[in-house]
Image (cartoon, rainbow, N blue to C red; front, side, top):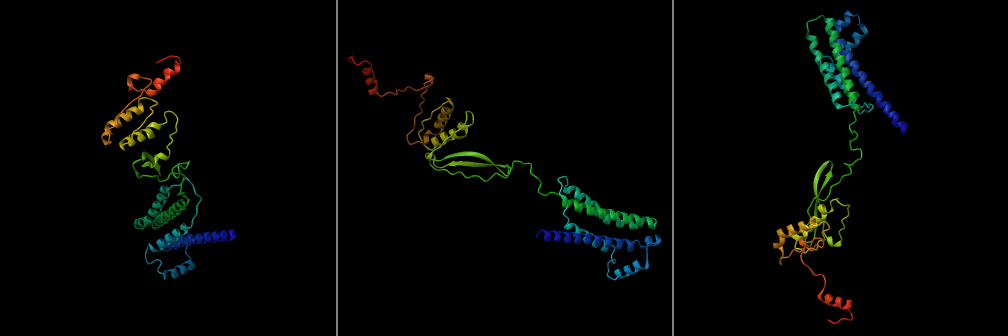
Length: 299
C-alpha cells in the first residue's frame, strides 16, 4: 500500500513537472514569434522551427499578444497547485505575496518595452529578460506559499487556552440558594459566571489558608444573601469585627424585610466594652453551684 502511494506521488510530481515545462515551452514559442527578427539576426532560426511555428499559427495561439502568455502562466499555476515544499517557520505569506506581485508586474509590464524607440535587439533582450524574471518570481512566490506553516505552534505552550470550557453564566436563585459571582477565561476572553449553590443545607465546606479570600469570596455572600432572604444568623467572628461589620450593615439595610424586626447582639469576651450583657448560666444552675461548693452550709 505504501509503495502504491509512493508511486502515485512520483507520478503526480512528473505530471506537474511536465506541466511546468509545457508552460516554459509556450513562453519560449512566444519569444520566438514576437522577437523573430532578433532571432533571425542571431541566426537562431531554421526551416524546422519555422515549419513548427507555421503549424502552431493555425491554432490561433498568437492571434493576440497576451494569449500565449496567459496560457504559459496558467500552466505554471497548475504546476504550483501540487507543490509540497518543505515547511519552514521563517516563511510568511507577506514575502510570498511580494514575490507574486513583482512577478506579475514584470511578466505583464514587459509589454510596454515593445513600444520603446530603441534598437530591436535591445528591445527584444529587455522584453525577454523582464518576462523571464517575472515568470521566475511567480514560480518562487508560489513555491514559498507551499512552504508556509498555516497552523503555527501557539505561544500557549501549556495548552491553557484549549483547556478552557463554558461555565454556568445564569443566575439560579431560590429562597435558600447561595450565588457566588465569578469570572472565568474562555478562549482568551474573560466572562462573567455564577457559582450557584442551590441547596446549601446539604453541606458547604470552605477551605483555605489564612488570607486566601474565604471570607471575601464565600462567607460575606452567605451572610448578606441570607439576611436579605430573612434568615436569623449566628455568626462566629474570628477576626472581630470583620464579619460583624458586614452583618450589622446588611441588617440595617434589610431589617424591614422581616415580619418580626430582628435585633442585633454582639457577645465579645475579649472586649466587654463592645459587648452586650449576657448570662449564659440558667437560674437553676446559679442555685445549684453554691450548694455543691458548700454542702454543709445552709442557705
